[in-house]
Length: 592
Image (cartoon, rainbow, N blue to C red; front, side):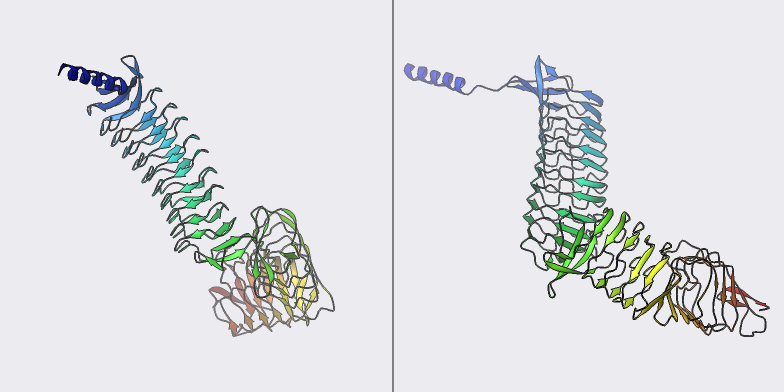
């Protein structure tokens, strides 16, 4: 028996040597409770009566305070600020859970991790300064901090946990550190005020489900070039996003990832087609399109419900589509930042470029000169609309059609119309106030020119006179002034020959310098809005009867900044077809 007792004693001593007790003791100091482990102090509790500004000591019993333990300050609702010493390396789960009076916080550089729910529902905390040594932010750590406005994630942080900032409804600015690797599920969900351009650093390889769900104020997005996965509903209802570039590293995009991004009009894939979930682009902008690199694999005609077009990489200026039936190219878009001189290629991918699409170069305000190659057949509507510094462009002899408003509001001074062009739509040169020379050869089968005017071959239809200014007289051959012929010009006074019978709609619309016009007795028809926005037109003199075929000639254009014409109507006192008013304007008989 004695031998057995001695043996047991030895066993107990050996166990004590092999498994030393790490917690030496627990104690209280002031309002804090703590325990000592491995030579460091862990704060375990704070009395709920603690109020106002509170500082955690850096040492207790000559030992450094290294950990703020689980639930240590939970529901200390009277605290307004807590000073954390630079000896602390870890803030554990629910450490400050429900500290509803806490208004601000500085986490020192010594802290490497913040545990789950650490600052959950600190509803008055407007800002937090995170230390440079921080490496991980736990799940739900700042969830429902509804007054938090901005936060910077330090460069050493590699992971942001699930729902970490979920419901921070006033958070309007977030900077993500360069070392970030993973963004957890719902990490920034319902951060409705998060605005501007979100930059996701290049080390991020995963964005979890719902991560930026309903961040309705985001306007821009720059995605990590090493990202592999975009989870389900990640950017759901980010309704102000207008364009997105998906890096070539992305191999998987989840269900509804961009659902209800109502302003999203352009999505560019830099690599091969990733696997995608259902309803990827459901309820985005009606005109939204997807662009891919011509060498990319795995794409069908549509992805996520959107049409897929072949487009060049972002470093190049042009975007285009390939007609699979004819194996031809149409230029559809151009980077609006392009400047100076631009030469459109005659072929792309060994396929001929035959068309410049609608609005393809619209608002390229820094373009000065454009060279259009032989082989182009169609310049479509609005192709160079509002290229306000475009002073020189050639029309090759292969072009047959120029669409409506193709060069409207450009700075052209001279244009040559080749004999091949047989269809020029209305308003092509509208607001081209410097276009004093429209060159048309006498051999042209459809068109003619005269003193800056573009006319039909018979010269009985005046099609366009964009540079009209001062006082002019309509040529004696003209029977019809076409739609928009003088629109936006600087003409002051107009006299018409007896040959004119028709003034079409919008013929003189937005002629803000027009003050007086004399309308011959041969005119019987005037179209809708012919004098809309002519805010200085004070006198209209009619030599004949009140026109029989007439619409509201003063109807203004919907987006016009010009006022309606205040005109008085003069007519021959011997004519009895006129009434006291004409479209709301007073009439007056005069001797003619």
